[in-house]
Length: 344
Ligand code: NAI
Ligand code: MG
Image (cartoon, protein in one colour):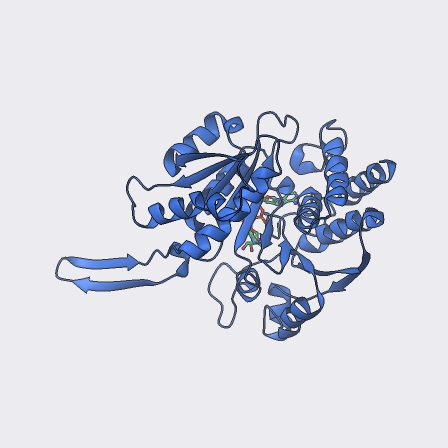
């Protein structure tokens, strides 16, 4: 058995932090099958050189040769450029990565924030069916919000699966079905329907609900009440960025994009042009994304080792990159984490 990982650093600090994530995976290789890495192209720089931000080769190799992938970050132009479209959005679609999973944990005090946002990645208002008409009274714009039982159940199942694996086993369904009783009602009912279809597998998971507006309020006042939150696309987008604000730096927040046949780890941050090339980007978001990807694939002990080494680096607050108030470089933090992994 082998594990083939596609590496797509893309632009800016992606090129500094994806190699760090690779190093962390190599450090736990005793817990994994034979490793193979394949370097793949995508992003703005690739677009300016080749005319496409996502070469066909990259997609084909991911589909045919890779078990999973790590994506760095892309620099998107601030104005519309003919022929350019975001490779990350295209990859989510090409590989049917329907779940966006984002754990948010406090850097020092995990009793305060330790939650996972599970965002549906394919529908809701993001089907982008909008139209604008001119009426007698002025312009009128409408958007379609698509919620299906199929997509809601499959994201619900991911939520239950994650909640089941955590100590508190709590799944909070985020919706606004007091107002949008048809669409959000279907989301809520479909998620609630998952245990009945799962042979008692999720009987030990506690289910709660929270309207999206009060969920954001409570997230800021008492984030410790949340464990796993599952939400339709738009609410999930907003909540996951809001949750990220609770812990200080974008540089520590990982994510995965997951489907039934593929998983892609991705730090939440962008290409950070202000610090790119200086060797001071925080590698933690990417290293944690690697751990999350391995955990999703069932390599739990490998993921645990990486996560523990990261937490044991962050908690003492001795060796931190500048975004967390320290003076350490990307390489120093990465080497320290690798050292702690090897001591375990
Ligand atoms: P950004 O996330 O790149 O940077 C925001 C701020 O956080 C900057 O001050 C940056 O230095 C800092 N930061 C981010 N990651 C860090 C890390 N690992 N270590 C230390 N500091 C870190 O967001 P921004 O500036 O809005 O966007 C820059 C470029 O990235 C744009 O072209 C944008 O389109 C793209 N972007 C790409 C994303 C992706 O690939 N999924 C997501 C967000 C933005
Ligand atoms: Mg967002």
